[in-house]
Image 1 (cartoon, rainbow, N blue to C red):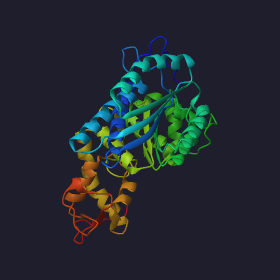
Image 2 (image 1 turned 45 degrees about the vertical axis):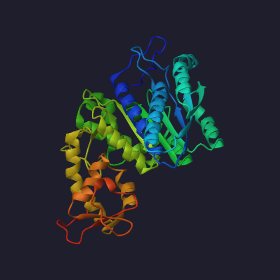
Image 3 (image 1 turned 120 degrees about the vertical axis):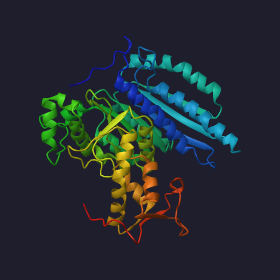
Image 4 (image 1 turned 45 degrees about the horizontal axis):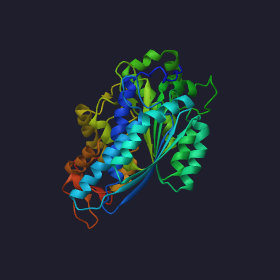
Length: 408
């Protein structure tokens, strides 16, 4: 099944999956800015946001598309940051932001220019610490990307966020995602696609991907393509999630493979790619703030894709957090034990955030509360508070353990 393009001239309707996707995008972009601008010594932050499939800016009900979400969130969050900095006696931070908007339709881009203009004027008038450059393009994204890459490399823009909200799947290849992640250390990609389009792409009948799927996943692809109603069953959400993650996990060190939550059938995927565990850490926390947005069927602790039909649906709500805490009680000590009983915290983060949906607060509380674990500071002291744990700390198994951990 291939989804038709939105009818922007006839006023596109905002679907529920898009509403949830925009909620994630808005809050994650806010947290991205708060995280990247938190150092008091930093007085300027340069970044680029590339929106590869923009739409015209407005839906039929007046809701905003991603370009307006980006500029509104940027303006509000910059004001939030600088109000806090002023209250602490710090200098304000200045943000230089390049916004690159693209839609393959010239008519849609012209509509976007009109709809975006009032918001651009407002931002320029209200935030003297914000410097904006806006560029508009109307090309297929896969053809435009090399030009965007050279533009960013030439201006030495290191912090880049790509929002790639395609209708189906075929417009953004894994080679483009890998190239983005390899070209900039501080690159992130938010990719949206239809699971059925990805499965059709992976079908050997199409001979498009050339990517073999192991462990019986190819049979699962064929089964879902034969009967898309299988996606209405939570067990098949897990199968589809594993298929998507297996195919896309090599694109970045940290890949979030969760679907957009829809109990009537998980049709749309929203995946987050990052080079930094910190980005995945923040993304997980954002999902827990709004449990209506994404869904995961699998383990709640580490090894999230090691699931079986007895697993439950992880909806990033309080019940899911309780399940994660229970699983992490064993998972974290076991990981440390398999690493020689001692694991630098930064190394733990790198491993854990490539394979868990858990909230960072829950992970940190387990480290402090679990009698088999202790957190050691740089100077050899012992951490007592979860909120004080740092990436420079060391995670250790205690000498007197309550459980013997074996390899699983």
